[in-house]
Length: 380
Image: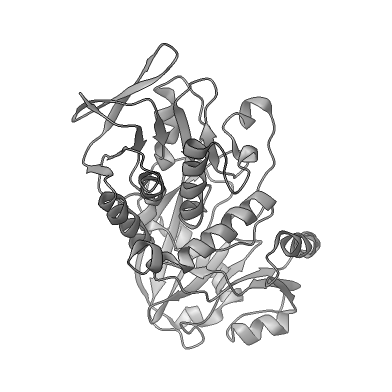
């Protein structure tokens, strides 16, 4: 029987980043992906990278992720296509203004000193086409930006393979074996593998993987839409990623056009990824207020992917105490791509060295059973 120190289930950006960071620490890694690497949710996201979160642990993770993406080509050997064009949050509700004023202070205390408060008129200087009639204030961080999900995923995959990791595509995990109270192996469509550690990086399917070992992993899938338009003169390649916080509508430059989308905070869980034209109608309704120039831009393409959402909109990172050897790196609630570089490094540190550069205890799997939840409010 083929063996591995660690088996990773899921070949999205999280699994590939983790495979690389473990292999860099001389861990014998086997990654199993039932489809193609990066072919699931990773390949369908908007590519945003931001540090403006409401919980300190997420800010710390993202500050590390930004450093890793900035130095990605030097470390991994290929560019991440990371453009630090910034993130702008437009706020239209008095309570959001109060909350974000306090967050700016927290960000500065954590070390994100470049994040700052902007008046609506200052925001329109950054985004000339921005509608600000109802905007009360904004936050902006110039070191945020956008990167290529495909470049980052494939870069980590190639680097992991160079270090000896085995990344298998087209292999579905059908079961996880537990012996003497701990993980002992995995069953797959390509046979059985012996291992004492399994990482759940299955994204929207993480709940089902947890059920294989009797663990409750509260991850639910939610559909999210993205569209890309033709050129919009008011949006250049240097225009920041702009978010209408109250509605979750967002847009950023994509080639010569604009990529935009909108969330559905009260939608029901689903694995459906067919495009729902009603979502476009909702997005356009908001766009007419926030970026009126989009009305004249033709839609070139659109698609839908899946968010993996947890009850507190926070990732699940670390070992599942009731099943020794079963670890989670899932449930990112819409910020998996941007957190994956840092999460992969921190989890590798925690497994191999027993400690990580950022304390991940607030994101431990056991927090749900203990009722120790602290919701992340800055989700889109």
